[in-house]
Amino acid sequence: MSSSLKTSFVNGVFVEADSQCDVLENRNPSNAEEIVDRFARADAALTEKAIAAARDAAGSWGRTNPQVRADILDRIGSEILERRQELAELLSREEGKVVREALGEVERAGRSFKFYAQEVLRANGEKYESVREGVSVDVFTQPIGVVGIISPWNFPIAIPAWKAAPALAFGNTVVMKPAELVPSSAWALAEIISRSGMPAGVFNLVIGPGRTVGDTIIRSPKVDAITFTGSEGTGRQVAEIAAQRLIRVQLEMGGKNPLVVLDDADLDVAIEVALNGSFYSTGQRCTASSRLIVTTGIHDEFVARLAERTRALRVGDPLCADTDIGPVVDPSQLKQNLAYIESGLQEGATLICGGEYLENDKGAYHFSPALFVDVQPHMRIYREEIFGPVLSVLKVANYEEALQAAEDTQYSLSAGIVTTSLKYAEHFKKHSSAGMVMVNLPTAGVDYHAPFGGNRGSSLGPREQGTYARQFFTRVKTAYQSA
Ligand SMILES: NC(=O)C1=CN([C@@H]2O[C@H](COP(=O)(O)OP(=O)(O)OC[C@H]3O[C@@H](n4cnc5c(N)ncnc54)[C@H](OP(=O)(O)O)[C@@H]3O)[C@@H](O)[C@H]2O)C=CC1
Ligand SMILES: O=C(O)CCC(=O)C(=O)O
Image (cartoon, rainbow, N blue to C red; front, side, top):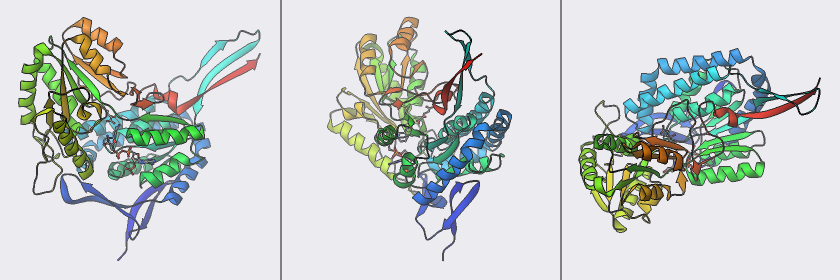
C-alpha cells in the first residue's frame, strides 16, 4: 500500500511524494534496526521548481526592510536554542555524535542565526573622496541573488545554519541540499524557518542525491553562487562547473591537520588537546588533528600517557551521558577506517591501540580510536584524510623540523601547537600556512563568529562565518555621482 512521504520544502510548501518513489531511509548508526525517518528522494524536476521559487523571491527579499530580515533570523535562532535538547537528540540519532557535542552543535546553529540577525543591521558601505572635482563615490554591497547550499553529513545542523544564515541575512534566497545521510536535522531547520515569517520561496530545501539534486543546483543558470562543504573530489567538480558558468563558489573540503607537541609542553594540556582534536566527534571533522608531530624529549612519555587515555575512551551509544565516542557514521566510512588501519600496518607503522570494529548486538558502527607510532611521512595514513579517529605520531628532533613537517601536506585548514614557549607559539602563529592556528587548544572546535577556512586543498573562496561571510554572500557596487 502506498502512502505519502516528506520530500522537500519548496516555495513555502512542504511537498510530499508517493512512497512508491525512490525512498531514502535515514538510519541510526548506533542501531541498525532503527529508522530515524523516511523521505522520498526529490528528482531534478522538483529541484528546478525550488530554484525557480528562489529566483522569483530574490528581488523582493533583497529589498526587504533590514529590520524585517533581522527579526526573522532572530526568531529562527530563538526556536533552535529553545529546542536544543530535542534537536541534539535527533542529531545524535541520525549522525552518531555524542549528545554533549550535538548540544554544542545545535547551540552553534542557533547562535549563528542570532549573530547574522545583528549583522543585517551593520553599517554597509563607504564614501570615497573622488580624485575628480564635483564627483562623489559610494561603495556598498548588494545581495548576489540565488545561493545553492550543498552541505555534508558531519555537521547536520551547524553547517546548514552557518551557510543559510548569512546568505539570508544579506538578502539572498536559498536552495539547500543536505547530505543524504542526515536529512532530518535539515528538515527540522526547514520547519523552524517555515514558522519564522520568512516569505515563500526565500528558503527552499530539497532532499535527494548529490548526483541529481546537487548536480541540478550547480548547473542551473538561475543559481548565482554555490557554497559547498564536503570531500575534495566533489569540491573540485563543483568548482569546475562553477568556473565554466563564471559564478562564484565557496568550498570547504578536507584537512590533514597537524598538532605539534614540543618538549616544553605541559603534558596534561597536550594529552587533552590531542584526545579532543583527534578522537572527539569520532574524528569526523575536517579540522580534526590526524597528524601528531612530537619532539624527541617528550615523545615516549607523551605517547605512553596518550595511549593509556585513548584505551580508556568509552565508545558507545551517543545518547548515553558517559559515552566519549559515538559510532562511525555509516558502513562505508567504517570500511574506509579499517582499510587505513590495514594500510598503516602494511606500510610498517606500529599500532599501539584501537583500530578495531567493536562488534555489538545492535549493529552499531563502533570503532576503537587508533594510535599509530613509528610513522613515516610517506605513509598513506600520514598523508591522506581518513575522516575517522585514527592518529599518526611522527617523531622529530626540534621545533624547526616540526614546523617543516606540519607544512608537508596538500591541505592547510587548521594547525595546532602545544608549548609553554611564547617564542615558539608566536613563530608558529605567523609561519604556519593554515587558515586557523591553535595554541594549546585542539585543532577542531571553533567559534561561530570568527572567520573559518583554510588554504591550498582545504578551501577555495572567501572565508565562512563571522563578519567575513559578507564577502562571499554580497557583491560590491561602486557608484559615482556628479554633484
Ligand atoms: N570537509 C568536511 O567537512 C567533510 C569531508 N568529507 C570527506 O569526504 C569523504 C566522503 O564523504 P561524502 O559524504 O561522500 O562527501 P561528498 O563530497 O560526496 O558529499 C558532500 C555533499 O556533496 C553532495 N554531492 C555529492 N556528489 C555531488 C555532485 N556530483 N554534485 C553536487 N553535490 C554532490 C553530497 O550529497 P549526497 O549526500 O547525496 O552524496 C553531500 O551533500 C569523507 O570520508 C571525508 O573524507 C565528508 C564530509 C564533510
Ligand atoms: O571544528 C569545527 O568546529 C568545525 C569543523 C567543520 O566544519 C567540519 O568538520 O566540516
